[in-house]
Length: 77
Image 1: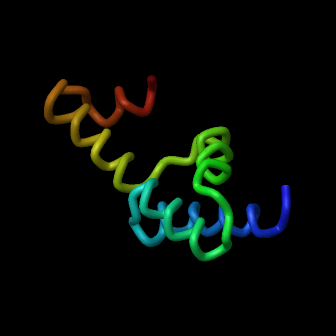
Image 2 (image 1 turned 90 degrees about the vertical axis):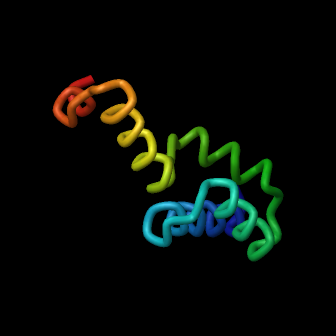
C-alpha cells in the first residue's frame, strides 16, 4: 500500500466520522485529493468495516422506530 492510498483511507475515515459525509462522497473527495482510484479506497474501507456516522444514525432510527427494537436490544445483538 502506497502512502497516498493510506492517506486517502485516513481522510475517508475522518470525513465519514467527524465531518458527517456519506461514504460515497468521502471516497470521491479523497480520491481526487490524493490521486487514488475510488475502487482502491472502497476496497479497504469495506475491508475495515468503516461506516459513516449518517449510516449508523439512520440504521438506529430505522431499528427503533420502524421495527420497534430498543436501544439496549440493538447493542446486545
